[in-house]
Image 1 (cartoon, rainbow, N blue to C red):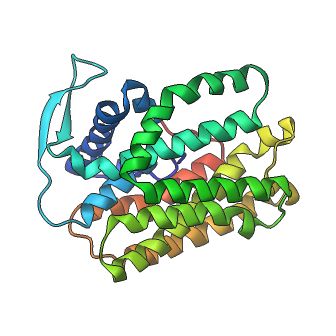
Image 2: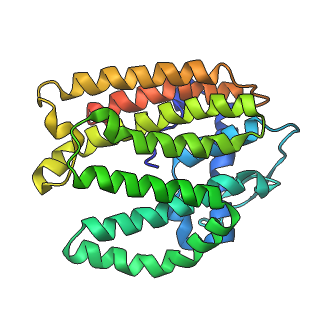
Image 3: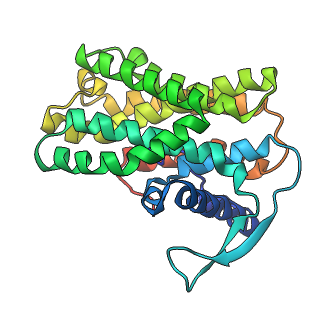
Amino acid sequence: MFGYVKACKPELKIKEYETYKAVYCSLCKKLGKSYGILSRFTLSYDFTFLALLNMSLKDGCDGFERKRCAFNPLKKCNYCKNLDAVDMPAAAAMIMLYYKILDNIADERGFKKAGYWCLKPIFSRAHKKAAKLYPQIETAVAEYIAKQNSLEKTMCISIDEAADPTAKVMEKILSLCSENEMQKRVLNRLGYCLGRYIYLLDAAVDLPEDIKSGSYNVLKNVDETEVKERVKGQLYFCVNEAAKAFELLDIKKYKTILGNIIYLGLEETFLKELNNERSV
């Protein structure tokens, strides 16, 4: 994941922002505790959304407590009392990171390639642990990478085909947030729309660099004067369809935070990214 699924912070109430930040910090703590301190650097807001969604569909109240930050002992942060609530998102983060490292080893050259070779053994043990806990995520991500690599090798020019593997893997990961079959179907749709959104936005952001390096990018086949408008139209479609799916979920808590991400955060993020305005 790439940090594109995040809240529109100015529109969050203070208590909502504190909860959002607490889940982010809890995920950071879980990564460090289960997979080692370096795993904390893999954290993104995409996985915070996944953690919030996973927690929102469960009964009961999530307790929070204030403790010192592992990175900054002078600072105190709010954490979930039960870190099991962020177990699945943390495992998903590690599995996706490992396959991303393998993908970069295959794609990069020179010092960058050597750097990823050095990272591989560091995260190999963490990957094995996460894959053992959640084999369904391991299978889904492995299939996603294989399909994506196959499309890139054939220089696929279809935006729909190129975005499909990312959409499918997100579909499968989000479906793990509920045991209810009806809710799973809704989560499948939400995951598919978000996965497509992530792929398209990342392709648009990476396009200038990919043109320079000669790397594959499905948007190279779109007239450069039309890229932004074409991508923007597809992203709006993804956001609207994700919102429709979200409204069908039986959200038990954190609905206003999740709604902020879906209704406001997605649009704010892609408009800023397409206009080369990086969020702080």
